Amino acid sequence: MKHMHQLTVLIVVSIKNQSSIPGFSSTAINYGPLWRRKLLYQQQQQQQQQQRYQQQMQQQQLQQQQQQMQQQQHQMQQQQQQQQQQQQHHQSLASHFHLLQLVENFADTIENGNRDQHSDALVTELKNQFEKCQQLLTSISGSISSRSMTVEGQKRKKAECEQLLNQRRDLVSRYKGSVEELINSEL
Image (cartoon, rainbow, N blue to C red; front, side, top):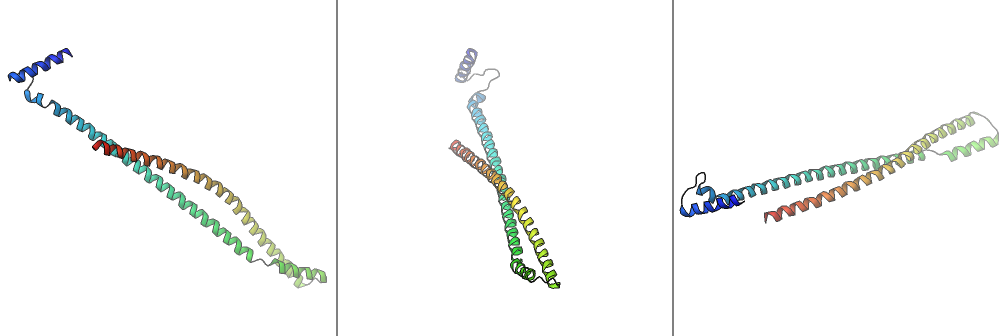
């Protein structure tokens, strides 16, 4: 440090006397602070570039999260549509069964005690209707189990969406903070 001070004194004396010191020029001495300013400027530029890069990365992450959320919403809508279609199918199947009339006709035939072609046709018709009922019940049973799985899946997807939303909020707040820092640093 002492040598540096002596060198500075020599330079100042040299400039005042306008004599030259070997290895030093008066122009290099005058531009010393300019180099520091250039270095500071370059550092600021690098910091701004890094901040812009971070902002771009945050924007990309936000876009990816938005796309994921849109895909999940689309999937949920498709599942709801499938459930509605199944319900409509079940309702239409149920409306085709007129078992009460068949059972009453069969009861009348049994009470009369006559076994003929008409009674055999009633038995066949009842048998067919009960098979269709069994198919309907099997279909409903399958949809109920898939619906409970769907409810669990929707709960899971809801939790995932909430997590993505929280991440998005965090990224937005960090993005806002970095923009504010950038604005403050430019002022």
